[in-house]
Length: 241
Image 1 (cartoon, rainbow, N blue to C red):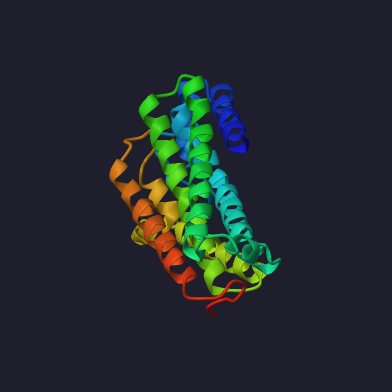
Image 2 (image 1 turned 90 degrees about the vertical axis):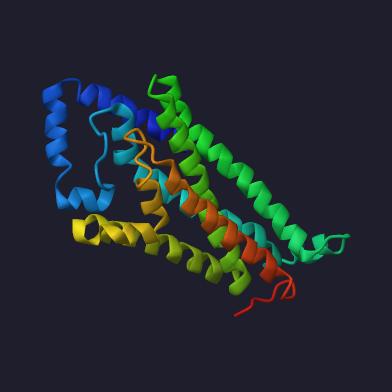
């Protein structure tokens, strides 16, 4: 819901603040500033409401969503082990691996919800459907990446606060890599190492390069799958490190 509200505000702000061609040209000039590029990314079709909303507000939505996903994934895994509830669940005819897989499945459904609600404002306000779908899928996969990172950290570290810190550190590193990549054209290749950069390279509402969605798909699958495998190699409550 927060993602939906934020994107709605961004679209309406653009339409009210930049109604003319001249005002949009001034926006394009502002977007070439290095400081602006470092924080918000390389501008795409920011002369359109959809492109502006993703450029101006997308980075904040991604930060909030990634932080929430890591916190929730760690709470459902390492947090449940810390308080002893995981052992009660495992007293039933379940394996540790299947329990973690169920947690990740629930979080995957939540990630789909985040993507759908984040894109609904564009559809409701008449922005291009292709761009809205690209944003929905991209935000869903980005959320899944953060979920996988949280689940993986929960296998390595205990207690919950340490696993949370590790997961959030990965999110922070991803955002830092994106910022450095956007600071100069010569460093743009660094964005290929960051989940934030992968979503930037989709160019939502400005080309919709769908092939870049393969990167978060593969990453989330590999890291989430590795976490499931590692879960069977330790006792409940015990970290690998």
